[in-house]
Length: 236
Length: 357
Image 1 (cartoon, rainbow over the protein chains, first blue to last red):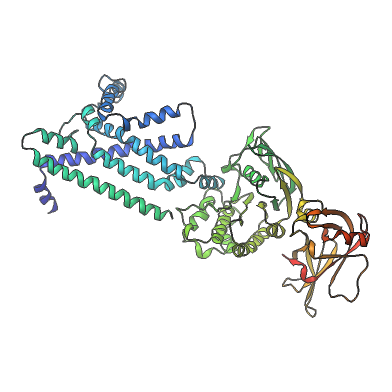
Image 2: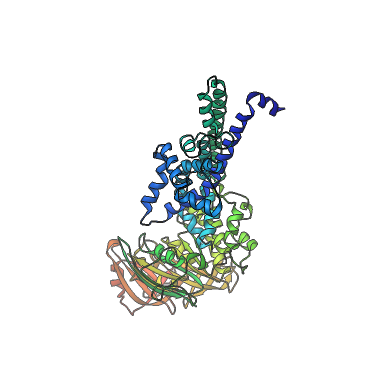
């Protein structure tokens, strides 16, 4: 029943854009978050020579124009890019102009957001509790899984949700690296942009914009609520 | 069996140079002012702080020997640690906290139900740490450390963050624990009452150095230590109940090679107990007085006389056959009685002045 009324609201290809956007964002966060946790862990717990450079590299997508990030991705992961060639030769993976490419662009763009919030929450974990766990026989991985990550989980989850919401609106890097192919790489913002290019597409753009707004708002409210809930559970 | 610690470490503000050896099992109290190095020793024993040079041996097991490069990480030391701030895991229930260490070792002699009843925490098992009082938190922390089946128990000022009432609530548990477990325990404190009640051995520390170490009955009755110049200075004597005189409502104790009468105790004959005799409650005499209310006239030999210019008094150390007593008197009293090291003397102590711990 609900589905039918929804179909009245949006056309099938519009739903396709929404579905694609949600899938791309989910994959970007799903693949990006573990790497971001690892990166944040390394950046908070270890002092090494290349640390400032690594830190700067991680945060680069945040300050670069997204188009530049997209272009750099093209150079690295493009069909003739050094990593692109390896991926194609070894695994037969092509990223440019594919859903996977859109995912990669989103993941790279939101990586700094995730690393930042994971890092802040890792730094807020009381080192004394990790020491206590050590004296109780817990090795480093044991401590990471059972003490550090659970205690940092509010920040990690909030970071993931904010990153997810940001992915829904990612434009510059995606269109540069993955282009705007309906059903494959045309996420919501790209679809809105495409609609605006067509005479009489304003209505479609408005509909998609409303969806975009709703999703973004829901994401922010959810992150707020989860953060509060987890902090209550953790007794803060 | 023994605990042997040697460590040297240079901090920006202080240089530590520590060496002591005390008997095990039993409670060894590391006693001294803040910054004297107590916590450094306990952290090194736990493996949380790596000293520049250090050898730590517990009952023949080498936990650390920096000369030969031995350094067991904390997670492999089996050293249960109780921190001043409890450090319970906030995202776990009390029961899960208690089982944290237990689940990570082979089953041992210390059982969950025994620890829970020994510490009286049965009603707290489903609670979250942040809903507990300070005293309850520390009891859970002690339980958690014990259930990890430690071979060494480390307690870093476990009662320091508690008010007097909470402290009084926990001390009996610690005393029970001490007798129930045959474990070496290192206990850091700067509170005299905890030391007097719990210590079998004492290590006195000041500014990163060991001032004295040995059995509590010896260390607490030495007039030459700063300990004897404290307001609450007093000898500790390990005693056994010899007789309960219900008619006179008195109990006779034997300890340190002397006899002490105290108000009737609730202990059976043969039971062990310890008493503290505050230095300012001990009167000295050269002849036994007659027609006097006090019950304890303890003969001894003057071992040391130490001046305390701050309080315009002297502390006299009276040697008993085993251990000794302290008495704080005026310099004038020493002159009038003609006391010097080696002179025989009588220590007069009211039975009600003796603290039975």
